Image 1 (cartoon, rainbow, N blue to C red):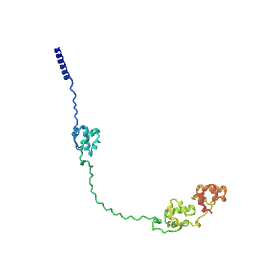
Image 2 (tube, rainbow, N blue to C red):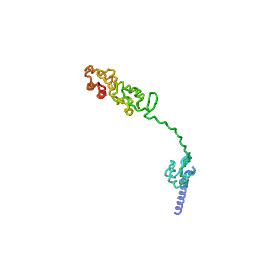
Image 3 (cartoon, rainbow, N blue to C red):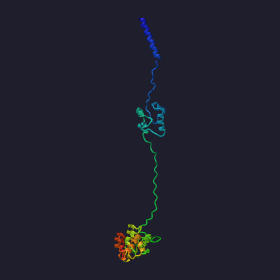
Image 4 (cartoon, rainbow, N blue to C red):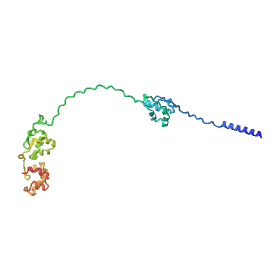
Length: 278
């Protein structure tokens, strides 16, 4: 019996030994922890970055950033590198050392201020012509005109240009408008001339007048048709209406009131024509 037990133990020991020799060896953890040490990200080399646990590609990205002028001025700048993960930055943050001198921004080159040059004296500008200086005669500037008093219906071109504010252009315009009107009935009619605004009128209104004796009156029933057609307050269309009214109603009934009531003349034109009626 003892011999059988001995044989059984010997066989069991042999089988157990053989099974251990035939089984594959246990896996060995070849991964090594990165070495952690203090470093300056502005000067550390690629090899040292790899020792910290960064890949070659990550290390090259950091070095290229520095070569292009990039600088790490505080620890947080290192975390902004896209090649450094948040976890890796938290692992390395206690070991990052940036000298105080590298924290300051690059100083600008000092410029030497030149003494300011004394401004050159500008030649005195000639005084501008005042509003009181106008044409004294056609063809050039003259001396300022003295104030005059001119009758619009009696004045010729020489008298009109003697008025302050009336030059060759408005002299001609006034004479032309007086011709189509027959005469001026008031100085306010100057405002009806093209280009005559209130400012120009205010400058000349105290130098001109209209004498009642100078207003040329006419009969609207007997007036020449061509005169009526040219008249600013009548015109060709209304002149034809007047002619038709005379044909149908007769001259004796052709009055301003009748023409207005029959809508041949407007109330405004009727009022403006009234001073001219005989």
